[in-house]
Image 1: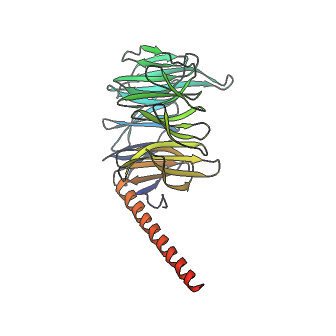
Image 2: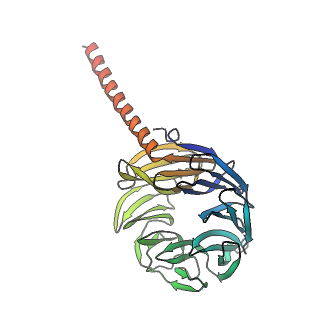
Image 3: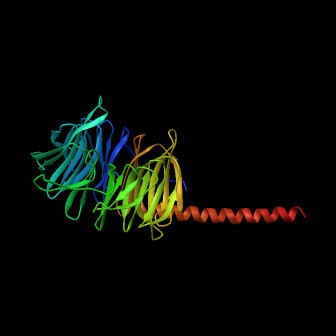
Length: 356
């Protein structure tokens, strides 16, 4: 199946896509490397375009507001119109943000080119009106920020490593892991939270190492009793507890996400990049079976809800697939393939009769 011909919607951001946010009934928000932000509604109509000061890395929607990290700034826009309500400059790059208990938490870091390292990082607590309430500075860079079990968690780099919870007053409670390797990524569900480490370890909320993969963990997608990990060496794998359910090697994976159901089974979508050619792969999440794949540009971002999935590309394209349409196209192509097989078999029989 031509995966992109089956997309419900394809739009152009006008620059390389660096962040996506998708919500049912609201639509999709796409941010770019040069600060362009667009919002299309649930029907695919362009609602507005805004220009932010720098590359957009994270988007969050709450209470009629769109929050974005853009270079050194955290920016708040009105979701309905795209009008900017406020912008707050952090000390260093605005790396990530999270909405938690009616406040906005932003993570910043200062990188020193001469030392080739991060000198100082911080967590900022902001009110929704842009008022800065407090700042908690630290030597370690928070590489990921997650909500789990009614707490906010940050995964840390060197020198301390491990992870910390941070409360409403900015106080940190640190937990060491069974490895001193920096945390590179994390993922959570209502029932589990996992961190990936630079040495290939995957740890849980108690700091226990669940498994040691063969290379550094690039991204994690937590699922019930397991995870799907992308590794630095290009491996994409699904592990449930101590069992490797499936694994696929290839060129580096640039984006991954779980997707809607297909024939009653969850799907998994990923983008790979060889350096010159991209590929989007759609798999049965439970078995790893490749359902379909297509060549593409470099996939930079991915997001999904229960019935749709969106991918953003370096070319500026934003593609969105819808569950029912995807299933119809897959079924139609499957029927065509069976028809072609029957036709080929009949032609083979006719040739055999002529050759007698």
